[in-house]
Image (cartoon, rainbow, N blue to C red):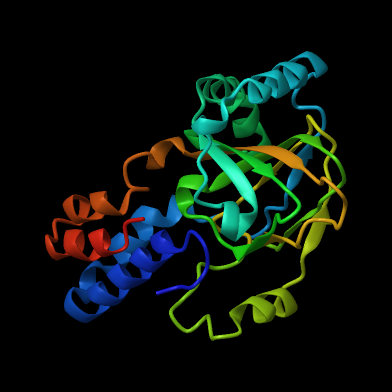
Length: 252
């Protein structure tokens, strides 16, 4: 339904919302209210956590990356993003868990880890405007090593999109219709933002010989929403069997 990367969750939400409005209008409020904790307060702004990784941990993290075998990396985003990725490496999963209390304090909400992934960008790196699915309501973005600064652009908190919010030229429309702030971080510092409610993107990587940028993305979800963040759980919660078929259509 929506055209950007990682849009399947928002598409499922919109499809179920439309279905309930048509077939079960008295249950729309139940659905919206149940998922309200996944939305982000409009006043939230990205927060920089300077040196959230101490020098020793940063050095250790980079050593772990250097020791990952080439065959262990996921290559499905080399063409589209100019990056290798690796999800939920044991070292970084443990590190994410250790940072959970700090993230809860930063975003003023009790959270639990959802997933994490390493991104190893090359000179073809790019990240087009998108919203994450709410498994990444909260993201802690930490650069680990880079040959040059490469800012991320983040919008204010937005309402979740509706089916009328995109056209064939939606990317320039998003960039021109919202104010974006640029953030550049030193290795070891983190940026906390709400990826599912704040549009974000990176321009093409700097034109530099042998450019690289290594990042870790730690994603967190509100503790109270560990079950309902999964669209496949909505059917049982509402007691409406048809929702399961709708939600399954939008699984990644």
